[in-house]
Length: 204
Image 1 (cartoon, helix red, strand yellow):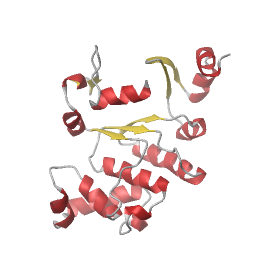
Image 2: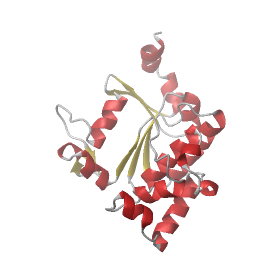
Image 3: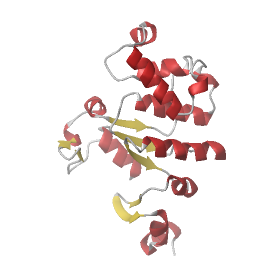
């Protein structure tokens, strides 16, 4: 149910019944994907999608919030505010020394970080991140945990992940879903010890 949950929150899928409230008052089921994105909800899919033929900096420029098409975004003069925002994001996503490199030359993990940076360029209130460490090296996985902890200081972040070592590195509240309902919620140790979780996922 985790993908369905994200699909409903972002407007990709309409629920048969019920409401989904954001910021305590906006029913997301009454809005389309573009409207929901403009409200400040960003989604990171499992497979990174970046503009590989462009530099890291250009990728972030293209993602900056505001109405802009590709050519104006790439060729207009960067404002001081744009430059500051990109500098800040490059620091957060650990790519400050690679701003002029092509995205195609990044490792899988670094492409994931770049796409997270592109979401940050939209200044979201909520980030939905789907299995961000799939295919990463151990070092990239640990750095991704630190990166998401940094982001969570200023943004709400929901991470869907099956790697329990990574979840422990995040050190956050864990929600276990089963057949579309919350089965257990709390610390990782609490959820892991919950007899209902053990029964459902381990069959004993």
